[in-house]
Length: 200
Image (cartoon, rainbow, N blue to C red; front, side, top):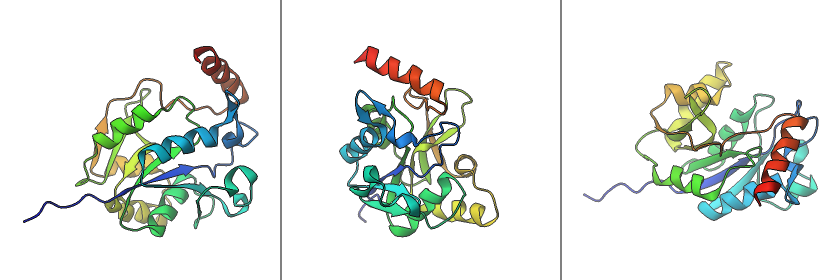
């Protein structure tokens, strides 16, 4: 009997957030002269068979996003779960490597660590947060089997992807240092910009 072939891995870059605290589109924030969306996109393209940008309908023609393959949210105002579910329902039989677009310290090595630790017989593979030890849903590998519970919870009004990972068969990896630190305010952006430019 032949071994079961693991589903292909596609990449999903979540870029549909409203960025209320930042007061501007996080995807357009530039580090080292390059918009964060393109930095993240290049990481996903390097490690997955195909990659897509998750967008809200009104973002489709945004110049930064228009030139990239897109998956438009099929759900309104439910946060990151909208992008994950929309991707899963567009390509049913693949695993999704999902990353948020506000992780400026994320690197290719961190994504390859996640992929290499993948357990395709479970529902997901994720890093733990270095702050609370809980799963990080926005740099995680979501297997096709994760769709059912995420959809059920959204249908019941629970939109938290992290809670879905907690309730799923999720392989958890140690936190990858500060690679998953995100930025939410103009002050955090300025600090991160200085940190990246000093390091480069």
